[in-house]
Image 1 (cartoon, rainbow, N blue to C red):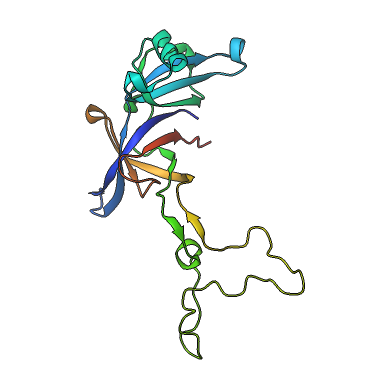
Image 2 (cartoon, rainbow, N blue to C red; image 1 turned 90 degrees about the horizontal axis):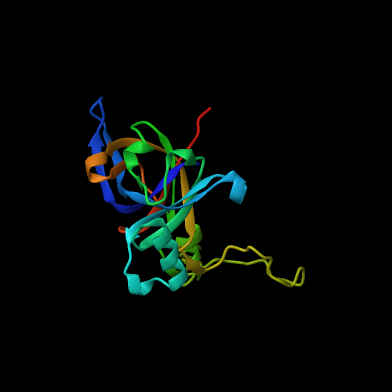
Length: 210
């Protein structure tokens, strides 16, 4: 799917035509620069490799620095590949802006890294209800309860919902509608929330509706 890279700025709300307040996520979407063009003849498929966000030259290794130099672009913080572009319309180093891909009303998917919550118990991590507060169980309010171990099967099954590290995973939210595109500021307003903390990087993919 064609798409673009961006950075989550925060949340706000806007009013639609009926006067209803619509909660939106503000994303700085692009501009991105073409770092590599893949073709069917050479690579077996067509895709654009886009870079976003400035990076310090000293933080980029030599092979990656050479890759950017061939494309004629500066070092980037993020590099991702997107298919379904018409690669014949692009050249190395070309700028890809948000209004060239998206328009108001488009349906998109947004992928990012969720907020890291560290080690959490089952109530917060898996929304367990906890135990009773009475009948001598005052210390079991947020405990997981039985995890199934007994004489049979004498083990805990894989995948048992228990306490552990929460967040910090790649999450994709689908079927989000674009509320507004502000090309002069490279901003994209998407209805609802997207994964990640403020200033985290996200991928915005345009969904095809047949």
